[in-house]
Length: 272
Image (cartoon, rainbow, N blue to C red; front, top):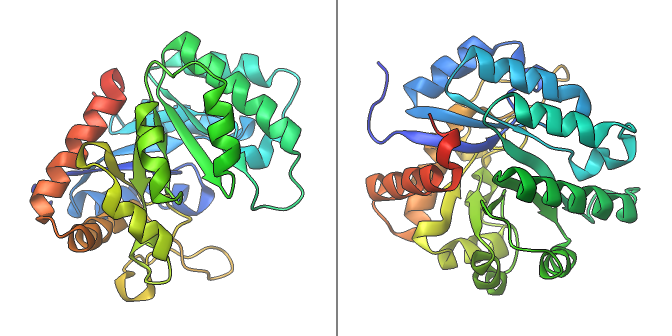
C-alpha cells in the first residue's frame, strides 16, 4: 500500500546513475511505498545532463538540476558553460551539483574555483537555486562566498559536514542544510552536532542515492552495483527521517512537514 503520511522529498540524489537507472521503475515504486513524493535529481558532468533532462520529462516527480561537479572540472569541454546554460533553459531546473573539494586527491583547485564561480554567476543571472558540494573545503567556500554577491535563490549544501559555527553565516547567505543517512552513524560526531544546531526552517533531508549509505542496522535497499557493493536508493529517506527525528527529539510528522515546507520554499517554481 502506498504511504500517504508524512510525504517526503529527497532533496539530493542521482537517479541517472546506471545502478539506479537500470531498475528505475522498481526504485520509484519502493520510494512511493515509503512516502517519497519528489526527487531532486542532480547532474554531475556534461555526459549525464541529457539523461537528467530525459528523466524529468518522463516523470513530473523528478526535479532536474544541471551542474559540473568539482570532480569533473578537469574533464570539461570548451563549450561546457554554453551547454550548461542550454540545459538549464530547457525546463525549470536548479543548478547543481557544483562545489569545492579538498578530499579527493589529484583535483586541480584553480579549475575547481573557476568552474564554481562561473556557475555561481550563471545561477545569479538565471535566478536558479544552487546545490553545493563541499568536502574539507569550508574555509575555501566561505572565502568564495565572501567575495561573491548573494545568490538570489539561495543554496542547498548537500550532506552538510561543516562545523556548527558555520551554520549562521551560511544561513545568512541563503543556505539550507541537507543531511543524508551518514548522520545516523555514531562515528560522525561533528555532523551529528551540527544537525542539532540547524534551524528547523533551514533543514532538508536527502539520500544522495546511490552513494551515501545508512549505517548497516538501518539498511533495507536490495540495490547492488556490478561488484556486489551495497548502494542506497530514495526509499531510504524514510529511515533518514526517523533517525533525524530521534536525534533532534522532534516528532517525526512535525519534522517531515517542516522539511517539506522548507523544500517548497527553496525550490519555488521548480516544485510542480
